[in-house]
Length: 331
Length: 299
Image (tube, rainbow over all chains, first blue to last red; front, side, top):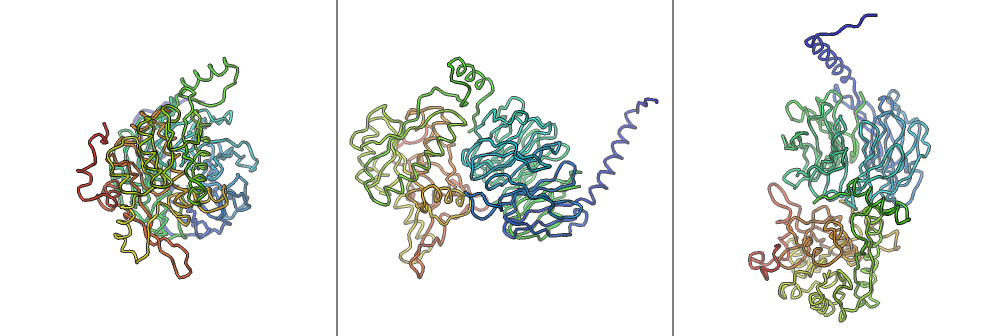
């Protein structure tokens, strides 16, 4: 066997070829949109931006995520009566190929958002009315741990190295950091008002936490857990909720509910590069694998906006179910 | 606006706790002096007083939950408005009637203690000279009058700080939490009690203090704001200590049930500042410029 060392130019060409094939693969991607009021999931073909399926579920569909192997979509469901755990409080598992629900996991009372470990092993969910986060086995649904976090826990994110789980809590304005190895809360950070969601850069060095009432995003150094800065969205008048980082780590996309906009932020300088009007009350936001498009779930206009990241313009608006909440993209 | 417990502090505390033989429990960043909040005993047995007391209890529950994350301790102490002692408490929550509110306003100032008025809407209480440690959570009569007028509400309409039917901006979560804890709806009186504790706890946490002076300074700071589950950042007006907040305009329907028919002021649009918009109710023309005293402006 011979080791071949490619010249730099050839390496670049190879990377370009790889990108091209990724883009081609993305063309058969599917966006899954959770609809809180109509209790269903809208499936959109991201190549044609048309609805290809609607999957009924058994409760208010909110948080939605794709498994790392892209084979499953998880969606958090809850009943219309918080404070009491009922059979409607669950995470449903959807098979991407058949678009059928193949399992339902219990994750404690009133699950809202959750995150999947990068190796697909576990799911960490926030229990909004319980002041806790629940960890379950992502393959069996078996309970792993329940952790006390802040009041009204909401956003959940896991660092790409699978080491730390961040849970934002709306009423205590806090971020709890869970050690994913020991399943213990190791630190609590005080952030701006009503923290809703968290996203990490692909290298895992920075966390971005949106604060809906504060109108800001807080940047956290994940190594030292120092707060690097807090920057405003829409001059501080925004209502930032959903946040996503581009696959190349250069852009942060923030969905700002009441102002009906998507803010494009430079991930290194934290400067706002563009504020793009989308539908009404965008909350959920997701970026395609190739970074070319951003999808926002617009809760009050019952549609999804598709933004071309090259031109920062809306290129498609797709009608979905009632009160769309979140969006996740499977390649 | 942002603070944190860093790892070094945590380890330091952990070592201290281990040395003390008490194990590693709360993550604390400050000296273990409890935040002592006085609650006026002048509420009597009125339904409004009971609702305020329930709100205060919910606020205490939440502060204690947060204390398990950040350390610290919150203690409620019953106090008589005529007997407020320096250093005994950092703040007093009360103002069930206007005379009680006036007595507390004077006596807390003398004792160097914060007063959170949660019951008296009296305009004269707010214009009666500058008292930098007096804060009004309950909307003033002037705010409510302006809100009803600006909403073009029908005769007989009124305005309130809160309503149990509110849903947006996490109001449903708060209403449900109160209902399930006390078995009754969260009224405006209950909201004011809850918010007063929340504000005092957060001021203590963010100012890293359990004494009145640094907490009052934090509450009056221009950049300080709070979340009251109303979807907007709430803050205290520097010139009269009044909480800037949207209020809800209500009327009775055919069956006599109170219904929210509007929110005032309306949410900002375009280039408007949300803080300026909230000053559209309860501020007399020139009220900001003609504030009751320069001493009330943030230093």
